Image 1 (cartoon, rainbow, N blue to C red):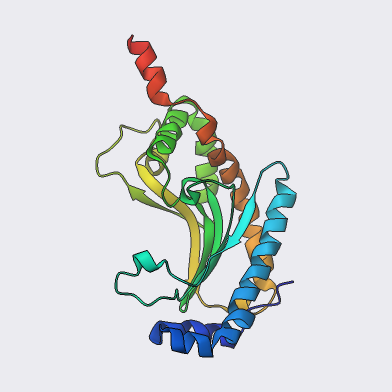
Image 2 (spheres, rainbow, N blue to C red):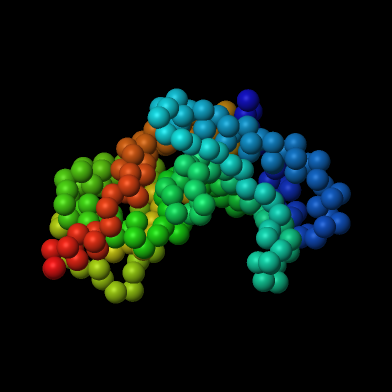
Length: 232
């Protein structure tokens, strides 16, 4: 059971930022395991159980990232990450192509939410086709999102518009190349107790209808095939 992160958690994150080398990490590895990795595992397991209880029909898995960076992608950085995160998602060959719940703890702040990091272009085309076909469902979801204060929609947009959205309210979704619905704030006392468990549960429960909406996109037909059939 998750009981909270500790001052040692924060000290370790700052320490690895300024001492990103094997010698320092090995000397502080037990602190990393006991105050960072294992608490993150425990928190992720509780959130996984909570979401699975709410959506038992989904084939979900949960993961905690490794602190070790991919040696092929260091690009002059040290071998260790200074943050950890867990995710809850459906398994996929490319995990970024599926909608994902996450929580991440960093030296200065923490963040959590739902979204895609690298969705397939076809997935986003299917989203636009669904918005064209049925704007009402996403209109309801967007009004709910805009009416609360915990989460914000953050998008990476296409450089060229993909066409007008069926409703002005839906423009951010229509032009998005990728997106997350997320919350971020500075380190707070909630992190050092079980209060963060209740906070995350409340947030993920709000996000579940959005997950329901996005997770079914890949099962829809290719909108390009339908367009080609009409032109023939």
